[in-house]
Image (tube, rainbow, N blue to C red; front, side, top):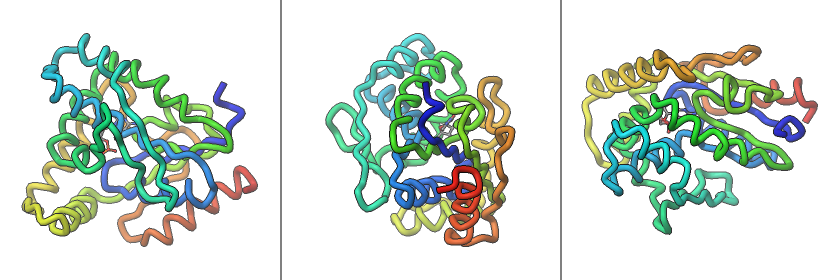
Length: 228
Ligand code: C5P
């Protein structure tokens, strides 16, 4: 079903730069882009809005399957606009709170199952760059190119700290390092689809690399595997 469309998966922890790299790759290749983390974030936000408690598995699974969401691609290659029930929630879903709740609902197998098909439909001609935690291991296990992008927890917390300062929100660096580590722990140790490199993935560590250097390495891997 999905194996005719070329698929590139980019997995890794938050703050590794996979969103930026995936968007650059999608734009360079003219491929579609899936931000799978946004789906978990949208579910967390939808649950809050509909007063669904984060431990109500059945209601969360129904919401995951039926929530009214749209991704509008940005022609300039930037992040897509994310719509929930006719409202642009692109910045709302980026808050620390929504991110934390997203990683809580992401632990629930019924939620992951409900979101599986909603992710797979993004695989359309001419191709897809899929960004997440389990793109290469589960959702697009037969993808031609798999990339695992990481960076040290300290470096990822520093990047987040800088973003928050730019947005004039404050949070101490120490608290952010703690939060990054807690989220890693939840993502890596959950029983269903834990965050780990897919078999055959190339590992890139962005701790000391610039965006341009990571992009060049990822682009080379795509050239090697797909000849494009
Ligand atoms: O990538 P992002 O930080 O937006 O993802 C938010 C949360 O959604 C992650 O912490 C993770 O728990 C969950 N997630 C996931 N599987 C994915 C993408 C995100 O479990 N493919």
